Length: 226
Ligand SMILES: [Zn+2]
Image (cartoon, rainbow, N blue to C red; front, side):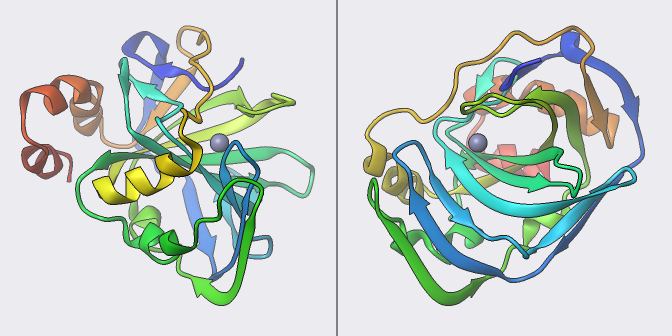
């Protein structure tokens, strides 16, 4: 199956109350590269996540705007991907979806240093990744692909079910660098290909997120989601 997908009730299979994801992140080097499609921070040897019985080592993180994944048809303004690889060569990508509201503390650490297209930025400074990210309590899992060439399949996707925020300024800073969308279009998802881990009550709220965002101010939204 190819990625990204729209996570809808028909794509969900069983549910699990367990939470089988453990973060072991360290401080990350600041090593940004703009390849014309995204801005990547290369950060090997920054730790790992344990999913099931397998350990996946963080290689880099990067961004898309608007989001690549959708939830029940709703597209978010921004999505962040943490790309990991096991020693056997299998990929695991953790995706964080963002709405516009409060500035992201994670992004604030290096947002002034975003390089223009074909440029890079390196510094001795270290980034703290273990912020709100590692305290998430639920997520979706499915087997998909990389969303850029060579679109390799067999990728473990973890879509965190907490919605993060960045400020409108932070979003515009990123968008202005590219001046065009940096997401791959939605790919067809097989029925029942996605498993949700975590609280089912949170899930039903999440599946209505498009309605919630359209009908209520964001302040209300975030008090509902947290
Ligand atoms: Zn990506």
